[in-house]
Amino acid sequence: MTSRTVIAIDAMGGDRAPEIVIEGAALACARNPKIHLLIYGDEARVKPLIDKYAVLVKACDFRHAPDVISSDMKPSLALRQGRNSSMRQAINAVAKGEASSVISAGNTGALMAMAKVVLKTLPGIDRPAITSIFPTQIGECVMLDLGANVECDAENLVQFALMGAIFCRTVLGVSHPSIGLLNIGAEELKGHDEVRTAASILREMPLPGEFFGFIEGNDITAGTVDVVVTDGFSGNIALKMAEGTAKLVSYFLKKALKSSIRAKLGYLLARPALEQLRSRMDPRRYNGAIFLGLQGVCVKSHGGADSEGFANAIGVAFDIADRGLNDHIREELARHYGIMDQLNGTSSDDPFAGID
Image (cartoon, rainbow, N blue to C red; front, side, top):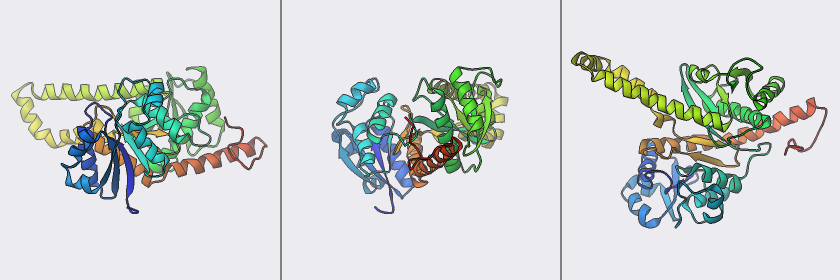
C-alpha cells in the first residue's frame, strides 16, 4: 500500500453511474498497478459490479455510502443533507489523509461546495478554479476557470494566472509559460474593468512565467499562450463550444466520407491519418478537470463520460498527486507573496499576512 497512490471514487456520480464508473475504474487499475482505489457507493448496486473485475477486486477497498447527490440538487442542500453521500464520504477520505485525491462525475456545484468546505483553499487563494488541458495547433495549453466562478474580480483572475502557470510548469513541463487573459479584443481599452485591472497587475508583478496580454477566443486553439485565464462564465461557454465543434467536425467528416463510392475509397486510403485525427480530437482524452486551489486534489469527470473517459480522469488524479502539484503551488505562492512584500516595503513572518 505504501508504494501505491490511493484515490477516492464517488461511484454514484454521473449520468450512467455506477456501471460506467466501475468499468472505468477497472480499466485504470489494469493500466496502472500503482493505483489503489477507495470506492464509495450503494453496496447493493456497486459491490456486484466490482466483483466482475478481478483486477479491481485486488486494487480497491469498497465502503458503503447510502445517500446519493442528484444532478439537480442545489449545493447548499447537498452540504446540509449529503454528509452520508458517496460524494461527501470520498471527499472526507482526502481530508483525513486516507486518499491523495478524489474523483466524481456528479453534480459540479455540489462537488465544488463540498470540496471547498471540507478541504479548504490553499493560503493566498480565495476561490478554486476548474482547470483542464486543451489541445492546440502546436501542442497543449492550460485553461482556467471552466465554470466554478461565474463572476470574478481582478484578484481572482491574478490568482488563477499564478496557479495556472504553476500547473503548466508542473504537469506540462513548460519551464517559462506564457499567460494570456481571455478578452473580446487585444486592445488595452477593451473588456470589463476586472479584466483590465487584472492585466495591469499582471504586467507589473513577478510571475512564474511571462504575461502575454489579452487574447481572443481563436487564440486558445492556435496555442498563442500556454495558460488561458478567464472567469468561469466565459470559460465554460468556451469549453462547451469546443466540445460541440469537435462533434460537428466529426459529424460532417463522417457524412462526407459516406457520400459516394469514391469518398469511401478515399476513406480506406486515408484511414490511418483519420484515426490519428480522431484520437487527437477525442474529448475523452482530456476528461478530468482539476479544482485547482484546494488543499487536496479534487478531479471532476464529465457527467456523460464513458468508461474510457472516466479511466482517463483517474489517470489525471494519479498524475497530479504523483507530481505533488499542491506542494509546488504552496511554494510558489509563498515565494511570490514574499517578493511582493519586499517590493511594497513590508515584511512578515507569514508570507500571506494581509491576504483575505
